[in-house]
Image (cartoon, rainbow, N blue to C red; front, side, top):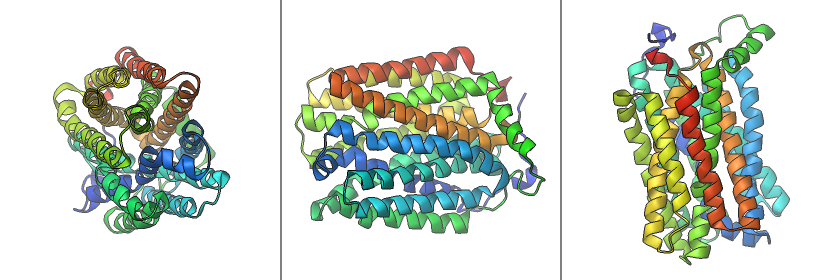
Length: 400
């Protein structure tokens, strides 16, 4: 039986609605490009190792986890459009702070604010899809929104590499990241409706507690969260450390690294976009299971080939499946607790960032103590375990 509790009056949106959400998700991603593409250069700037500076993502993810849990309550009380705009503003402030950072501590603090922005932008974009679009259109819409993040890599990586060639990694913030965040704020203001599920209802502490209780008392919803933690952690092997692997182990140039990042982003984007079609045909859970499994397997394999092209092919296929599992599992998570989608997706953002923090920390530790091969095995296995959790513990409420 289909469980679809969104009121009919919120089932239509303007032509700018979905593009606004895509651009918003796009604007949340360029700061991650900074660490993926310029991690080695930033480490040189602040006189530290790649493993240490890699923890910049760990701190940001921890901040995002904490604030995403806070968002679980805020999303019940405040307009989702307003929360989305504040999140984009946080990303703007983070980028400006990183541009002005003079030492390691200041760049860690500034970059951590991107975690606040991410914790607001990601759940609100997906929640707004659930509010304003009918069930049959949501999987494709979620695919486009998630693809917005990877499109930032596809478009942003070459542009940021070009800008950095004119100055340094700092110039990319001023020339790309900051303007994109401002465009996201403007489009959200113009293109996204201001309604919110409980905004005009009487809000009490009981309502806040009820929203969290509804999520964590639902075994399938909780299992979704755990699965998302693990596949998010696995993805960090490619997202955060693959470019450093190619540069340090296979000795490619920064120009070649930017092209590789573009290829990886394209594969992730295409995976996100085709995910909706597979979901509509086979179901959200089967697609999440199979793609999490394959993503984990290709994560393990990309560091075990000494040939650049074979390694790149493996990482690219892994990105394709990570794009698919992120979109399909987001759609699956969105439907777990329809009454409190904002809370569900906020907690899910906390789970994703917990996974990112876990992946960055474990990957960095594996790199410090062992090597890139150990990093890929450990994180790849997390993706495989995520597939097992989706298989045994998660149900699709729209098909029960």
